[in-house]
Amino acid sequence: MSAENTHGFIQTHIENSIAFLTFSHPAGNSFPSDLLEKLTQELHSLSTNNHVNVIVLQSEGKTFCAGASFDELLSITNLEEGKKFFSGFANVINAMRTCSKIIIGKIQGKAVGGGVGLAAACDFAYAYQDASVKLSEIAIGIGPFVIEPAVSRKIGKTAMTFLTLQPNAWQNADWAVANGLYADVFDSYGELNDVTLALAQKLAGYHPEALAEMKKVFWEGTEHWDTLLYERAAISGKLVLSDFTKKALQEFKK
Image (tube, rainbow, N blue to C red; front, side, top):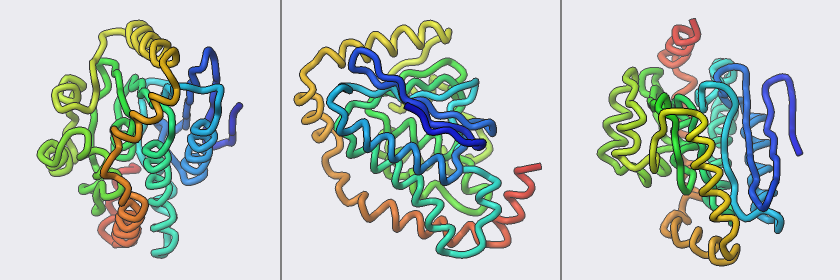
């Protein structure tokens, strides 16, 4: 099944109890709000699908995810619009957190901002050697507020601080492995595909209820994210209205 529009698509292919959930957008696989909503809905649907035991989250092209849509960020004119937009990422992360299926991330390229949040919200992630990461938000006058809980949960506050305060510096995939974001990194797309599929096949053969119960254990202590992430979205929604951010976004777009 798929949900397509001129701004990209969300597509799911289910085979042998594995759901391959793919997202795509022509602007570096960035996310406008409608695509975030479709991804959230698909995650909720897969969570209750008895024909699915495990999910592989992936994207098309050479970039994994460029984060939020700059065009949409520039179009925000009031606090309500800002909070609603950033709540889109909150919805996706919470859907990944509460999904009853184990989510394997196949990170085939660079991840920026919200893309790092998606990788962190996966239960397990493999990556290609070019899958560098960067949190650029502070440079445009906002901050990675919504994704911070997911990223800090994976890599710790120290590494999160390191990423946040160097918004123009890429950290390579080996750094991401060393800090716990990725489980391993591979030198070829073929190897990345093979190891991801092999893990998904193994997990798909395990007791679904056992996997679902372990997923709850993995995410213990995050129940407050149901409110926290939306409080964080309001902070970003306010900051994105500033003259500093509007000017910085225009410069970044150029």
